[in-house]
Amino acid sequence: KAGVTQTPRYLIKTRGQQVTLSCSPISGHRSVSWYQQTPGQGLQFLFEYFSETQRNKGNFPGRFSGRQFSNSRSEMNVSTLELGDSALYLCASSTRLAGGSETQYFGPGTRLLVL
Amino acid sequence: AQTVTQSQPEMSVQEAETVTLSCTYDTSESDYYLFWYKQPPSRQMILVIRQEAYKQQNATENRFSVNFQKAAKSFSLKISDSQLGDAAMYFCAYRSAGTQGGSEKLVFGKGTKLTVNP
Image (cartoon, rainbow over all chains, first blue to last red; front, side, top):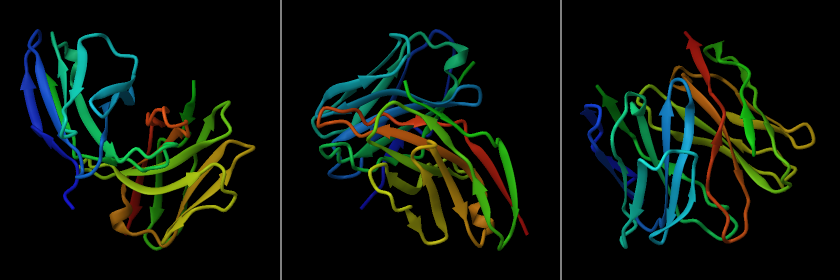
């Protein structure tokens, strides 16, 4: 079974632009979560989607948004990019069983550099 | 809010020896899950081991085992017979065991960089 895939793997943008990152979960997984990883702040939760609905959101400004499609693929969008948005963006998927007992599996990440 | 603390930013171990990485967490919940993830230079986060808080028995996965002390809110990872391929960042993570509507949000520690010396 193929793992979690993320595209693109690397991205360079300039301040003020917007960017869309994509995540395809493992086949059969309906839950997708996004994390931002930076050297200063570490790994921080962005948001979580299940069955096309946002279930939880981290403490990020409204410039960060996401969505999930009917095939469970997810996208996250960052508008009006700032230098501080430079980070590794990780996506994780799981089957999301009742009670949250299922393990999340991570993709390889998208490295975003904002100049 | 839950927090996870890894007090050792860096650790080193000789190949074939044993090393223990520390993790403490703070929560008011009684039911939760704890994880250790490994992140090699490739940046791919790989699950090493998981522990359900309701289980008293410590989880083991081959050379990896944990020492879970629920009362002390401690969750250390022991790596036996260390191999060069074990060199990576190791992250301890916490997740609430919610009801069906609960979140899958993982709360991570800052990580411990493990170096394995030949």
